[in-house]
Length: 586
Image (cartoon, rainbow, N blue to C red):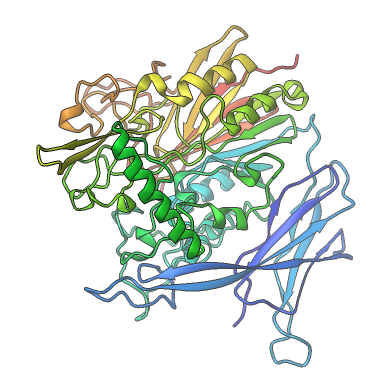
């Protein structure tokens, strides 16, 4: 039986309009939105085909088989995106709406309209309206995400917006991760209250996942939790994380092997630089001829309707939502293995088998979009921080993915361009290719944070490390607050106490690679209501990074408070921390 692939979700509200978007697996004959108190008004949708993919590791009912010893097969999976712009709205309106799609032309046996349930939409809220905004990130198909969103809705009912700090799925071109993964943890089902796991079929690959991409170590699925009905009534404002970026290169590992590759690699020796530049130029030529690029965020950009008047289009933007001015930046880089084994295409080295083939190099933790001083994004950020809409906003929030301050593992190495060193023996043969990162050139700490501090940013919100921790920085105007609330039920742990980050032996003790604590100086703030206690010392811990604990945070613009909640699997959430933003208005 035909159905919609997603419920509708809301995008890009203005003072008098809001966009309604939904997906189907079929092109259909007609699509529209009915809205109004009696659903008496109608607006037609425009439709666009989006080509996504599946492979042998997809948990999808029609996935290609995963055959031992053979390359992972990748197939195209087209879906259709439908979008209507509801117009004529007024401040304070909350109006019923419903989307309708007709699969086939009149006279066909498939011409019966398929209707969504009735939901509520609103235009952009006025600056004086009190809002509740859900802060979350890094869901990535993790087992406890449906439970996290279920608890958020149970506590707060309807949110007014979602600010999402990146890493929405694991493999952005894998269609089922967005819409219908059979484990019940796809992005839209979780956010639309439809996250119900299904039984496997003979065509479905085993419930095992590639750890290089997903890091899922169990198949824990609690079908009691269907996520939360949020996006049908609430606009979402995301930013790009490393999992929104993919490289379109053929690989025997299927979609899991399509890691981004570098556009540029800077090395120490001038002759090596000529060789590397030539090889990467040839790779770029081959990719262009095949319709590919070293990396892209095409799927992310095709799914969401976001402001696109920045030089980066949808990849970074600024918008006003009620009393909040939000600047969403593209600050993320390629995640690479921290290990130093000979087969590691990692943070700190290249694989031995690739030494003489620069086209196969990873380039270390490549930054996707520059943010350093003088870059296009940096200049745009300076302009936005000086913009009248930013200056007059009651709350000034900047959101991006990579942490400037964190106890997490992913904050090391520093956020800067990798500096490559090639070593050769007396015969000229390459014996090692290593990457180094200078803390003195960390673009977040040296370039971005001083801008935010001077501009009077109230909150810097980010993710990436799959934990909760927060920090405070005293400025000449007050306190700038940092929050990392990216622990929806899966964590990479915290470098605290006796637990150290994975720093290679040869780099331990190097001041560029800090094994414990926040590398960038600020001390973490201990949760001020109900912190978790260290099991041995009974001292309160300044973070949440526990495997069976989920976290979400909520921003209440009436009070300026950001409250964080934690829960153990199967138990009710507990409010464990609250802090109040400064305000630019009296």
